[in-house]
Image (cartoon, rainbow, N blue to C red):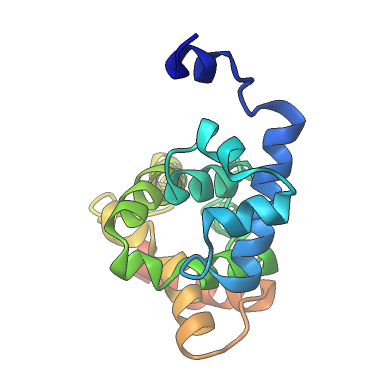
Length: 198
C-alpha cells in the first residue's frame, strides 16, 4: 500500500480528541501568545503527536482560529436581542466571550502582534472571527434603526465596531479596566450619543 492510501486510512482528528487539541491551543495562546506557539508546543500541551495535528490542520493559523471559534469564552458572538440598542450593546460586550470577558482579553493579547506581521493568520482571523462579530454588531444597529432609535443616516460601518475598538484601546494601550461598568459608560457617553446625534 502506498503512503497516500495509508494516510487516507488514518483516523481523522475529531470529537473529543479534536476538542482536547483546540482547548490546548487556547490555553497555550493565552499563556505564551501566538508568536511563541508552535505546532510542537500545541501537540505537547494536548499530549498528541504533531502528525495528529497536521492530519487535521495544515497550518498553525487555521488551528488557532478553529480553537478561538469553538472556545465558549473567547471572542464569541453572543446572539442577543433585548429590544433596545443600549441593552443589546451591553449584553453583547459583557456576555461570556464578549469584549469584557477576561479570557477573551487574554486571547486578544496573545494574537495582537501576529495581526501585524503574520498576513496569513491576520486574513484568516479577520475573515472568520472579526467579520462575524462586526456583522453581529451591525445587525444590532440595523434593528435599532428599524425601531427608530438611531438616525437614518447613521454610518453603520463606522459605528458598528466602535465599542469594541474603544474598549480594546483602553485595555491594551492604556491599561484600563474593560469591565461591565466601563462598557456601560462607553455605551452611554459615547456610542448612544453618536448613534442618536444627541
